[in-house]
Image 1 (cartoon, rainbow, N blue to C red):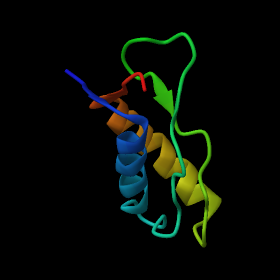
Image 2: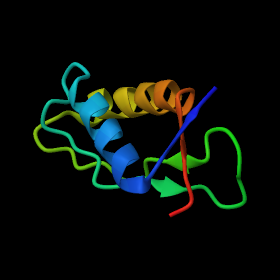
Image 3: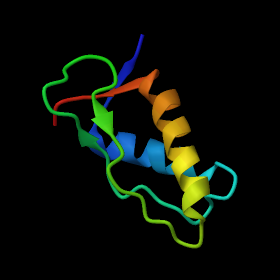
Image 4: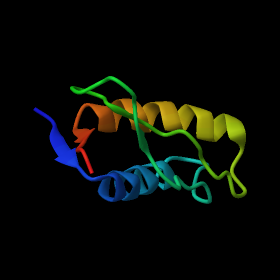
Length: 79
């Protein structure tokens, strides 16, 4: 079962999860956005990440991992 979160809540959760990944301490998630025409399950994405001093390879791997893990727990509620 997944839990609904607002865009702001899910952005904070994704940002914290990304920063906790190895090599991603300076990266940040400025926002998440809904996927069009998807109402159930993983209905959101992380469209952009600010790298800071993090390497793009570390961030790419971490974003995929964070999105998959959080997508199993949370869905984006309608704002």
